[in-house]
Length: 232
Ligand SMILES: Nc1ncnc2c1ncn2[C@@H]1O[C@H](COP(=O)(O)OP(=O)(O)OP(=O)(O)O)[C@@H](O)[C@H]1O
Image (cartoon, rainbow, N blue to C red; front, side, top):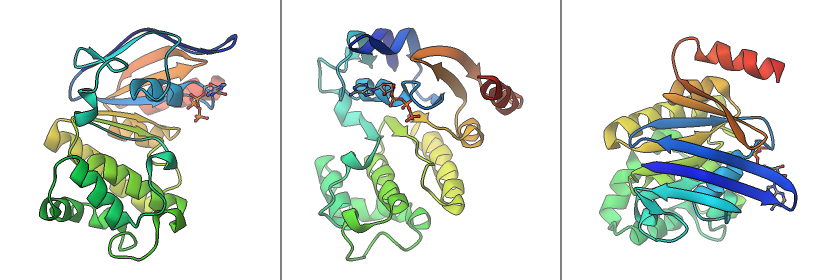
């Protein structure tokens, strides 16, 4: 589904991503972990054609993401607040995103119902603009907007950060169910080793721009990751 070949990003002399090869299969839940500055967000930005690589290619379904548009119709993503439109209310934003993907009002409402528990009564039907929501509630809006079209590929940067514990638990369940129901290829980055091992069947560790570990998640994975990060 996603194929990364000789991808390189450098800012002046500073190489921030250097990945010779990475293949992510269709339907896989892929977790990217690494310390601050490891290059996780930069990799996701290149995957979404938001940052131009210094070298190499990223293919989605066989097409280079920097050359074509097709991937945009089946890829949902939320990296940061820059993805939101602050002067809209959440309902207006969902209507906008839904319309963009050819959904009618009834379909949008029906799909949003699935997220009511996650919203905790604080998002839909309120007058507040997105810019005035708390960081956590902004994140909920962004994640749900990314999921609304039921994308084939879903890319989320730090989805659990800034969320309260109850919401984190609800989001984990939602992501697992969403992937099962839609066969979504799920790419998430996270600093939370617990959450990422619970949600993802494959974990890749990034350090200083390079992939240093590639693990199929099993019972011992959390311990292995904790030991690795305790020493690095
Ligand atoms: N526009 C830029 N100009 C110069 N350096 C940049 C730029 N964008 C990112 N970097 C550098 O690239 C490196 C990787 O940053 P990136 O945000 O991808 O890491 P990350 O793994 O997502 O970190 P975090 O976990 O802290 O979010 C960092 O050293 C960062 O300073």
